[in-house]
Picture (cartoon, rainbow, N blue to C red):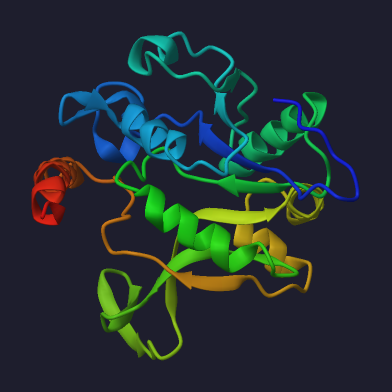
Length: 247
């Protein structure tokens, strides 16, 4: 995982996948990242997409200390695994950043944190994020403008309607400098729910890079059928692409 650095060498890019959750909301039998979708585990789809992003120097997967299932569900993964996951996402990411530093990453390097449960991510979406953020002083995240009317709930009823103007739904990857993100998470605390929130707490404004509705997080039981259908559709498009481009 070690990358050479000098004043003439661009910062490296690393992917960090927190994968220590239990997936209780998904209703899966065991951690949801190992639930099958389209014949492969969710995390296998995620790691396959990351492996096709040529500019990533390496991918680090952060597991629970007692995880004994990963290798069985992610056969062929050639990146690094660290069983140092914490009780929250933020703790797992923070421990993963320390692991990257231990194995040769530099404070100025970029880290792209991606949810294992966003298993439909496409390499081209990740490349678009990298293109947008490499020259940015802060970094940024994939996100989508909110299209639906938003309601604030109270006791199961609508309390008020929230203006959706200017509202975006955050996705991943979220791409920031390693040391800046490390400091941000340390100061924000273990309860912060995404990397951008921690960066924002430092007074910085991450870049919003328009993502794709297909990059949704598999969270609820019904999401598995939707993800399977999308994978099947994408497989058909990928299979047809060479035929369409042929003379």
